[in-house]
Length: 212
Image 1 (cartoon, rainbow, N blue to C red):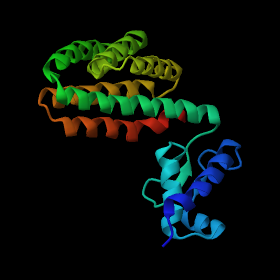
Image 2 (image 1 turned 180 degrees about the horizontal axis):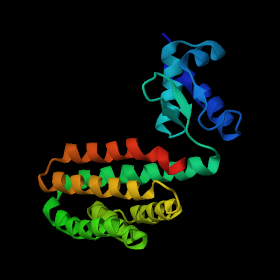
Image 3 (image 1 turned 90 degrees about the horizontal axis):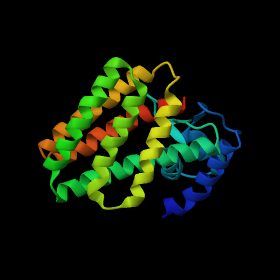
């Protein structure tokens, strides 16, 4: 019986290298069947390699299809996407810690920041929006008692600053405000699993446009 993890590793490395060197370009499809033929491996092994690339943010799933497509343009973009993904992972960790402590106190803090975030979206005030998203995140990670997570605040802030000139930024800020409001509602109700789902759904639905 083949051990898919070990067999998939060199495939993962080879495909990642081709993407980072632009042999495979952004948006180009990467099909499981092609990987099976090229590397002479089973469908299970091919999918395992591509799934790992997807989890790393290097590939994205094709909507309505079974295959994947290249989701990054360069090593620098991959690093930026990886840092942003880590920030979302830490947000999930913060929810877990809140489950162990007093979520009501945090929800009060979050509600305050949410008011400013929604006003900033309505008035299209980017600077106010970014500042209060930073405050919201800081409030979320307060209970983790891990100061290292504070670097994520600047990562999120810089990402938002980089997006300001993009045409979809107004819609994106609206999506953020709506997602954060759902997060607060579920925190107040101590529906922690739903908190994780809100974070994951926002990440899945919005992360790709940050790098388009």
